[in-house]
Amino acid sequence: MLSDGQHKPGSVKMGYYALKFLFTQIYHKEWAGEYLPTPKTAKTLPLVLAKDEVSDVLSAIPNFKHRTIIMFIYSTGTRVSECVHIKLTDIDSKRMQVNIQEGKGLKQRKVPLSPVLLSILRKYYKEYNPEYYLFEGAGGKGTNLGVSAVREICHKARFRTPHIKKCFTPHTFRHCFATHLLEQGVNLLIIQRLMGHADLSNILKYLHVQQLSVEQVVNPLDNLNGVEALCKKK
Image (cartoon, rainbow, N blue to C red):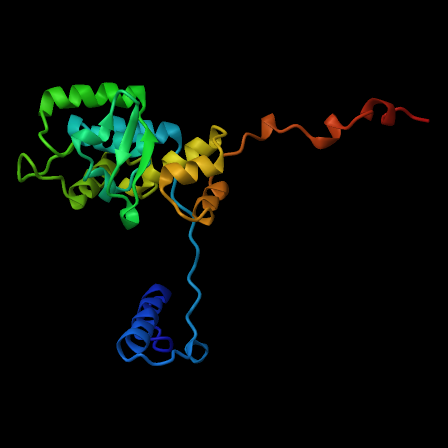
């Protein structure tokens, strides 16, 4: 796989760890990893939309339910798989929070519930009257919407927004949630908790895609004690 040039580094790594599992867990043999190096994989930055681009995409989604789903992801930072498994009981309007019960690695977390999102969800509930899952699927009451159906919403929205050249997906709005919070000055540790990441390094990538307001940066020389006296010619 390493030499044939037909496999991407990610595929080679999957093969590497599959072999390691076979040797160590099935055959109970020692794994000599130094003789089988893994290739380096390129670290790509997350795709992020500007706030006005997010507005344009949402405006281009005519179906109210579909628009609500993308707004939910953008407002809560949920993964698509988490979003489609949100239950009605996970929306806590008293404490203004969303309880994410089926997070990655079966980890639970709570994220703030936006007053705007709550208002939209109430209108959505009156119109669609879901029974168990917040976003029900084609199977009817008691079934959840599929992940592929959410991807299709963004796929259609891309055709309606040709001026946006970025190939956005539902996961893009999770990246937008984190990046826009960072641009608003929210602490990285808070964003890490809201995103459900165990490792802070997963959040650091958003530092590379945030828009910096250079105009608001105060030069350290300007704040130096006694700088006026230093400016005088002796």
